[in-house]
Each structure stands twice: as structure tokens, then as C-alpha cells.
Image (cartoon, rainbow, N blue to C red; front, side, top):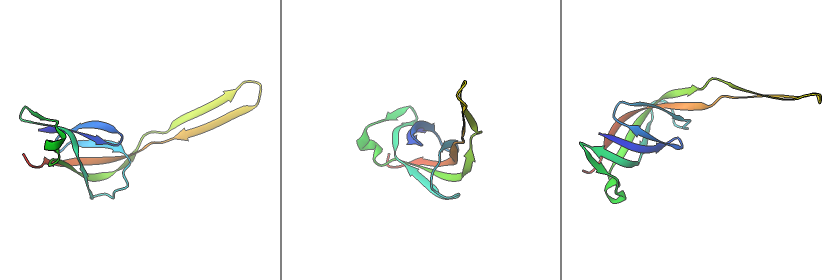
Length: 104
């Protein structure tokens, strides 16, 4: 059984015990996150009707936060003395899917 959910601005294919890295959530470590699936596949049966999906929920536990390596951005223009240096480090949240369920 797996489901497609919208998490962190992207659609992710999830099944039970998967660990996902998604855009930063404001939830604390150990808390539970609930998503409504866009599609559920259960034993070859595909459910995509919004009326039937209303009873399904995907739950996940927040494991912690992480960050990407720093991206250095350097801008330079010749003969003008213009130099600019910037950096960016994206923040992420790691979650473990604990259940996919609902009315069948």
C-alpha cells in the first residue's frame, strides 16, 4: 500500500516506515503530522476519487531538522570594483510515515 501526498511544496510517494526529507515544518520533534492523500494504491486498487479519499489520512512523525550544504553565490563585475558574496542554506524536516489508513 502506498499513497501520493502533497508535502513541502512537492508530491511525494509514501508508504509506511518511509523517511522523507521535506521543506521545513514548524512542528516540534516527536509531534505528528497528518496529510490528506491525492491518490492511494491498495493491493492493486487505485483510489483517486475525492469522495472516496475523504476518509483516508497519512500520518507521520517528525524526526528532526537538517540543512543542505551552503551554496555560495559570487557576483563580480570587471573594472568597476563591484563584488558581492551571498550564501544560502536550505532547511529541511525529516519525517517518518507511521500509517496510511481510513475507511475502505
